[in-house]
Image 1 (cartoon, rainbow, N blue to C red):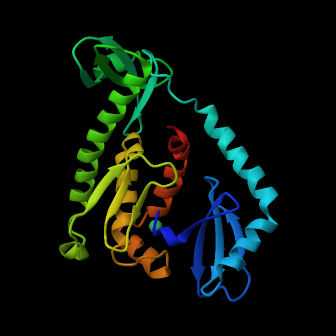
Image 2 (cartoon, rainbow, N blue to C red):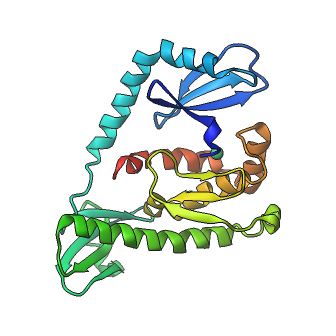
Image 3 (tube, helix red, strand yellow):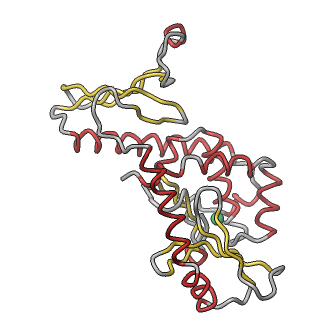
Amino acid sequence: MGLLSERLTIDAIEVEVRRSTRRKTRIGLAFDPAGLVILEAPMDASYDDLASVVTEHGRWLRHRLAAVQDEARCVSPPQYGSGELLQYLGEAYELIVDIGPRKVMRRERDPQQRLFQDVRGIVGTITVRLPDTDSRRVKKAIDRWYGKEAQRLFAESLHRLRALPWLEDWAGDWRVRFMRSQWGSCSVSGRIMLNTHLVKVPERLIDYVVLHELCHLVHHDHSHRFYALMRVHMPDWEARRDELNAYLPLLLHE
Ligand SMILES: [Zn+2]
C-alpha cells in the first residue's frame, strides 16, 4: 500500500522502503509476517545504497520468498467447477455451476441447516448459471460478480468512514481492480485504487485498507504522523493488518 516510490523492485525482488529519521546510517533488512521484504533506511539513503543491501542478501531473500510462495500454492487456485469453495467476506461458499440463462447468485444457508454443515464451514452457495460452462467463462463471470460486489462493498466502507474531517476536500476518486502485489494504493493526486480480491476478506479488514489509503490523502508516506493518524481513527489497526496478512495468498491467484 502507499505510493509507488516506496515500493522498489531490485534484482526482481519487490521491496518496501520505510524511511525514518531515527535511522542514521545503516539500512536494516526485515521480513514482515507475510513475506514482504522491508528495508528500513535513513531519510537520505540513495537507490544504490538500497540496491546493494538487496544484492548482498539476494540468495537468502529469494529462498524466503520461495518458501512464502510454496505456502500460497498449498491454497490451491480454483478450477471453477461445482463443489469448489469461493471466499466472500471471509466466509466460504460452495460454487454451483449450472447451465441456463446468464446469472450469478449468492445464497446464505438457512442457519438451521448450518448446524449440519460440513467441516469446510460453508455458509452458503454461489450459483453461476451460464449458457456455456467452460471453466474460463465461469471464472470470468465470477470475477465480474466480484467486481460488482467490490464496488458496492467498498462504497459502503467509504460511507462508514465518511466522518473523517479531511474527506471534505477529496474528490472521491476511487477505483477497483484485481492487483497482485498490493491491497490498495493512493496516488499523489488523490486517486485511490482498491484490490477487488478484498471482497474475499472480512469487512473489518476492508475498512482497515480503505482507512490506510484515506490516511495517505493526508500523509503520502508511512511516517510516524501517518501511523499516528491511523491510530486515532482505528486503534486496533495493527491487529487488523496482521489478520489481513493471512489472506496474502489470495493476491497470487490470477
Ligand atoms: Zn501505504
